[in-house]
Image: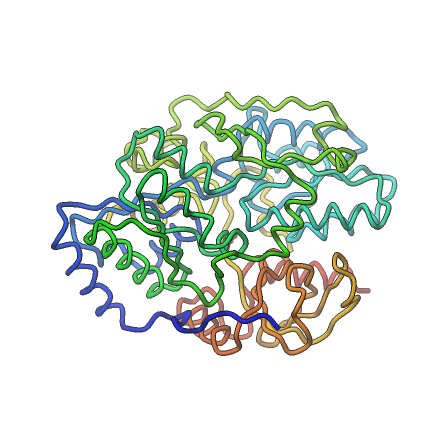
Length: 367
Length: 115
């Protein structure tokens, strides 16, 4: 039976006020601190809990590239829409991707014009759909970070063991650590530490962030999504900054082990290999994506249909690329709240409920 | 059911927190010895969803697991699972008797499949 340490509770000890006091004490010893929350679910939870308002003025939280929809190149959407319109193909997708506008409209529009788009809430459902519709070719839109990538790997293994010839995946998975490293290497934003994503870390483990500490001397503290747990993570990051001793730490050890989930890592390793991949409006980041190993090429939609994904296109005026790198905050974009709103989004950061722009719009931004 | 599926871009009232995983308790298992196909019924405070248990090889009936997009990502201690639920309800991410949006949709879609 697996065991998880329970020395620090999922609901962190101490009240919000006590944690805010602790943060203030550390912050008083620093001139300033800029912390990036990498995960889109953190971004939303931080706004929902009003955490920015609890932080001292010299502690800044910036949102990072952790919203799966937001980092997916627009060319990927275009290719998916094209597939949906082909006639014999059903595109199976997570709900969030449906409304992201591509150059020729969104998957929702492709569907309204007769394209075949089916929303699934689990990769397994796409496999079941393929099994139930042997006359259709099913393409699963496999997006997301390490939280969803093992599910894609398992869906492919499942399709293989069930002998399904009509199931493929269009890979758009991204890896968190290479992106965090790339942000530091680009040096456009002065980051002092990372609040590392909770459920990505369940899979990859807290130790996965060690290279960031070793190469860039930036602390990474894994936190869950409960407000006190996020505050505890911020407090720990500041404490490490004050001590000038960058380290990896984990305040979400109820779910995250140092080495992560070995079963999840084993399926990833079996099906995929790291590849260079394009991030929306950021460009290519080395070894930051997942490609199929040769044994699984029959399940690769890109190979089966000979698809080229244009990773360079980006709507004029949209600053989503800068927003997801923490370079600017949403109000800096002239489209924000004017021509780009949740009802009529232009960029993916406004479409996704986890997008930084959508969170700023909904919760009134700033502090 | 697919209220997120507006015919135009935008206007999605739902929150789809792609990376938020929810704890539930395994109450039933199928193919427990198949490393890929092992699945189980997971109870989320009264709502039951069929999920993959391939990534939690040690989970058995009665175990608490953290579920994301229909896949159990990790096993949890019962107390921690219940504390997480407390927070989910306090934060109104989950109302009593309801499931968070993505899981509710998964439950609905599974209910539709069953004649």
